[in-house]
Amino acid sequence: MSKDVSSTFIHPTAIVEPGAQLGVGVRIGPFSIVGSNVVLHDNIELISHTTISGNTEIGENSKIFPFASIGHPPQDLKYHGEPSRLIIGKNCTIRENAMLNPGTEAGGMITKVGDNCLLMAGVHIAHDCIVGNNVIMANLSALAGHCIIGDYTILGGMVGVHQFVRIGPHAFIGAHSMVDGDVIPYGMAMGNRAKLSGLNLVGLKRRGFSRDDIHTLRAAYRMFFSSEGTLRERVDDAKSLFSGSKLVSEVASFINSSKRTICLPKNGANNIVS
Image 1 (spheres, one colour):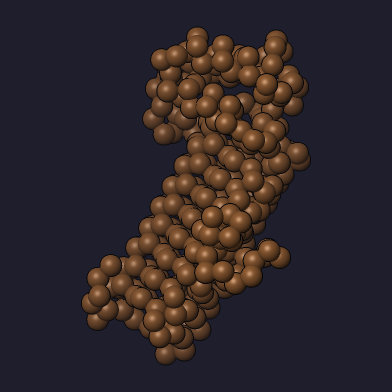
Image 2: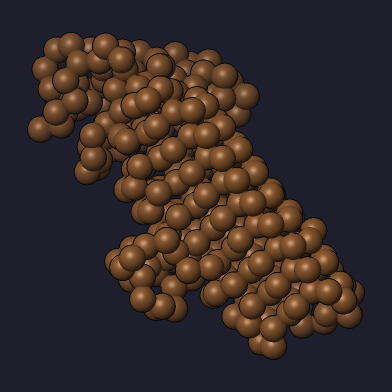
């Protein structure tokens, strides 16, 4: 981040506390507040009425809309003022009334959002969440604490994600869903409680996965969630059969590393891992 702030604009009604670090081309709109430990990289724009507090760092070219609350203490009764952090990547858009909180001592002291993310109006990202790159969270979707969201995941409007849940890369969660189990990479889930409804085929095609890769993943998906044996056995069989597929290996590793219930198809077989 350049130290030349000659092109930075701060509206007369905004408050930038001493110690805040502002990059080149930062624009701070009316009635915004930037705390003393905040780092804003180049070409960030705060439209108006935005408050950024705590040990918060935001990457270049990000844009934040009115009434977003960024970096204020987490909504966790176990938080006692420890100097945890919130890191937001570059090229992110954070819309009105979104709330992002820093981490806690119990969760590693950091909340992190990747690059190129779109967080729509009313989105909530709680303490200790790790959100990947190119993630879209639609209006009023919310992550409880300690969630992990993979790259290119899309959460529909009003989705709620239970604490400690993992959602794998390239997954799609339908609107109004309540997700209380891990969702496999490339999966599509919806409902309350959310169930798998197949693979995110539209997303896979849009992102350039080959026809052969998608065909192999579909065949492995049928094996993962068939009715024979335990999930562990089915995963091991599919991983062996499709040993040349990076996508199948990724899904198998995700399932085998899960410490929670795996989100299953509505009429899916038993999800016992071992």
